[in-house]
Amino acid sequence: MKKRILSCVLAVILCLGLFVAFPVTANAVGNSPKTLSARAGTQLAIKEDGSLWQWGHGSHFANLSQTGHTPKKFMDGVTTAGAGSVHVVAVKNDGSLWVWGINNSVFGNGITDRVEGVTPGRYPYRDPVKIMDDVANISVGSAHTMAVKTDGSLWGWGWNYDGRVGNGTTEENILSPVLIMNDVVAVSAGDSHTMAIKTDGSLWVWGYNQGGRIGYDSSVDYLTTPAKIMGDVIAVSASGGGGHSMAIKTDGSLWGWGWNRQGQLGTGTYENTAVPIKIMENVTAVETGDSHTIAVKTDGSL
Image (tube, rainbow, N blue to C red; front, side):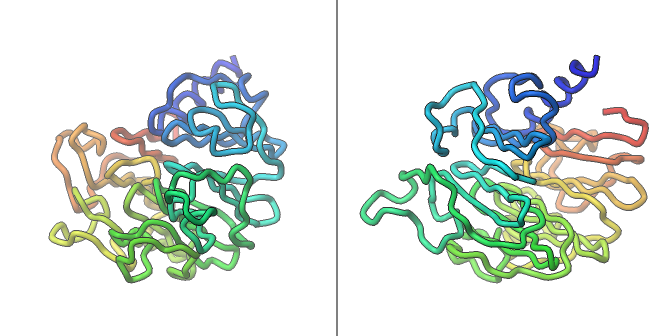
């Protein structure tokens, strides 16, 4: 029964990634994987022993013998990891942050590609490249990465033509980590926008505002610096969403905004909204998919 429940949970989590090609059971990566991440055909799993396993279409990003549906161990001592469209980011238990994959100006190592003369974005780094230390947690968008360091400072890099990094510019590519703000406890990077929670519970947003995905003034196309939109927030999710965002407040209420053409906000309509709308009460966890949302309530119902 325990294995059946775990398998169902894993299947739900994996479905939040884009283009997940096949179901995975708990036995695929051994017993009790504690964390999973999926995006654009790349699947990642971290086991209880800290080993990181990778499989799927994006396996060729790593130094693995072959691609395919069989998980292969890639790295030890990992606490968290995330996949972008063409790259993978992982944080080890010593706080160091590593990247690998195709460096289409998304690595944060100061360059666009490793080999001069090679078409940008087509040369894979099969071995991890260390970017920074003292990292507490990360969130990986399709082509940008955000990292919260142990001192609460938030850093960002990658594509930025729509302000998604939040450094006050629309410079096309931010090639090295830049400081965005301080006193941050959590961050979630969407495909083209970012949300961060500060220590006082305030929620800050920036980036592309199509469909109202940042929950800010609908007349604004994008924000290049963080703007506060609400308080008393304890959790957010935008990393799996194509254009919508969700937030849980301290009272357990769930709020949503942004694209809603497939009913992903749960408002009972198909209308987009640039203003946060209360969706339900007594929520403890939420995850956004490309065009759907999953929430867990205090009674354990999904």
